[in-house]
Length: 246
Length: 298
Image (cartoon, rainbow over all chains, first blue to last red; front, side):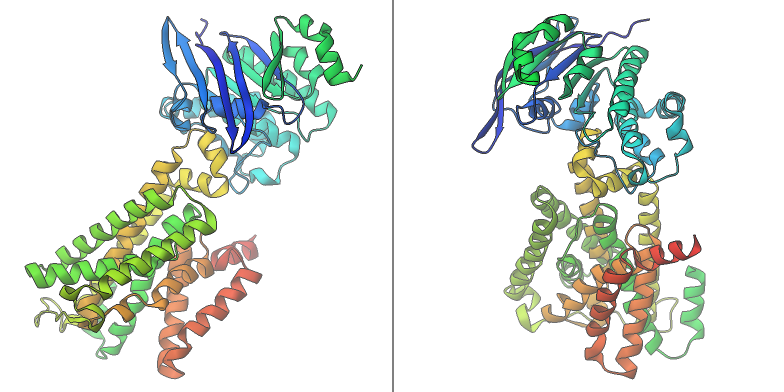
């Protein structure tokens, strides 16, 4: 029984901080069930884009909306908690756990939104099933875990809100290569398990492209390249110059 | 505990204990109230004296203008301070950390300036608010006030404890740990902060409401006192700010020590003791007595 996720559409979005224009007329879409990679090196607007979709950074112009059965729900101008209520969840850059709360408390805070609260216990059991290491450490303070475990917790916390669309910001930062590879596999597995749409900002091109259906390359706040398939991304001259310096 | 408190008002002959006990219990309420915003959510309020005074002056006005009975004074004082808490929260909770602390301090100064210049409540000269002669069920009125404050203390601790163990309390803890993350996890941070600021204000106002009867002559300098502002912060910090027990322990230990110091050494040394203890705890046991005890028991 497929759960229908809405389409996420970003159209002509600009945003910035003070005099800095971090996003310039960015348009993209995320179709139901897709994994879309948001590529680009640090400082090109990937995080700003994700944070703007989530309502943490106000847009200056352009629109963001969900489209489901022909009905459009605008996101711009809503508070973050109401965006979360529409089924979007964020795995923030740098994990941003609640370090002095336990693993279990972190997880239950993920299910704070109204729609998720009722299924909190089932979700928690599922999370522990999917991440056995977290079950073992359920009473441990989140801040005392290793980087890899913390990233798993950040992912599990986002899944606790029963999202339909998962936004993941730079999951690989600060992790050893073997852990990055394992994490990317976990993201793909969770995406399949919960039938999510995933928008993932990632600097690590090779790892991101492994699970992405397609992707966008952001350069200085603009969409510089649209890869309609993972192969197109792999074979793009721009991507090669940009990432590999060749 | 309430029965024990009442039995004490019958059994103990010396009135002084009830004056001292009233002050200590008042600090239990204030410290507990401060902790809901300061300890649970991590928003430091330097303006406790302002909320306390709003409670005291509202109660005095209700008494003088309408002849309201004590429970109505407490309710009115609490509500007025709660409204100030909500309003201040709305303005100030959009700013964080040290800026929030400064804004609350400024709020207390604004309230004091208004009171200083308001003739109806006597301005800086103050105003007499005499308590009724008869205290039904008690041998004198100060004992009734002591018992009233005991009820408020128990009540505020019950409120704080239920907040701590609720979804609301978990949301506040998330705000304290990482507000940005709390927001992206879907915690309605602004709403929770407003609720905490309002609740904290209500309890502070309620703590101040019986004060006019307690002192008989209500005037700004003792109502907006440094002792209230400092103790409301120091007691939870010394007791341990993350659980309801912290401010209670802090208020009993510190409030008790101050009362003993007042009669044995000097009344001006009070705040010095608080200051020294606070410095000591911040350096050596930042999680307070509760945190220290937990560490030793582990």
